Image (tube, rainbow, N blue to C red; front, side, top):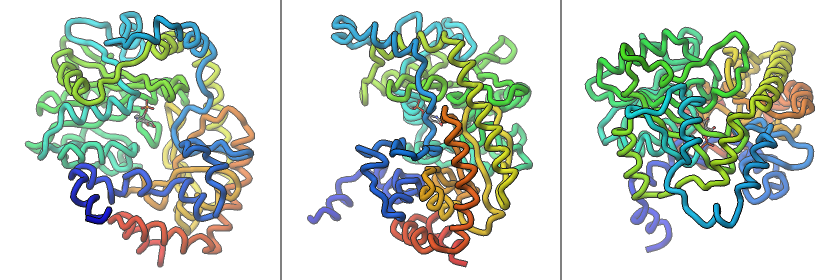
Length: 448
Ligand SMILES: Cc1ncc(COP(=O)(O)O)c(C=O)c1O
């Protein structure tokens, strides 16, 4: 067998799904693609293949790391707890204080016989365990289009079919109870309720949440409530509610599994701390599967850093101010740039979309040009079919205002460059190489 045949024979069907999936890492357009198109030195811009771009003078507005970084109090706590005794042991679970803190602070519910929190490897670990624990082949999952990269492929790997509700101005770029209900079939097992929603940053109202929860309960459907972007209130008039916090005897939330992490709220993606919360009887399934697969428990230094970070209100206040300032700056930039709009104002977190369809060129061509002006972004094709060539997703958490000043300068120049057609062929060639169905459709549209 040559290596091609080995790939064909040895890879599981699950892995093969990802090889040509439009949302498999490497199969969608990122600033790494742009680095190649521009012939830049990748090792200089993203040393050791890092996700975040740290090259001199470059600004990363792409991946969703909180660029403000961790609170100093958490760094201190991590140091204090990096002792011989604490590194020597493998904690079987979260320390009780952290469990209690996460239950209350993140999910708005007290620990009880009906509610507990399990440590997982970041919110992403939570996504993996939720899908692995609750999905069977043939199940249907209601999600959104666009959505966070991994919501659709993760469910498909577990044999489920995703019914993706297209997010538009009509539904306010989020799931609505009416549309959720209309998409339920006897096979529906799960609703992915990402709230605040990546990529638009909008939140569901309390009424919408209660209605969706009621619809799910009536139809025996599990809700996967991913709330990992809820720490920073970007829009002071908006209010986010973790679904678990709405649990009452009249509105029980035992059919809800909630997930959060510390990468967004506290700028600590390296720690891989995350939480999965829900009824112990359901979490027991996830715990058992975890023990048979990764068996990763969260180390003590990471747990203590998280515990301290969650109490650092001054950090949250200061970082929220930075994020609000940055959003305002982008809003002004968009207002002064022809062909670009913000489809919906983000309410929480630091994740937003700009729609470049008025420029007459694709998001991928503009993203390539933006990188030539030292700004890295993610385009819509990694997030879904909707907006695949119209959307650019922006991370606006960078603490330096220079990032946003450069973006203001770079955006019109990047659009003008893209409009000359100078990057069109290279973008087409990227999608030809990938060969995904979405890529083919993109080629057809941008070749016109
Ligand atoms: C909705 C959502 N869930 C999960 C994650 C992954 O978070 P973590 O770093 O905690 O695994 C992200 C990161 O962008 C996200 O946007």
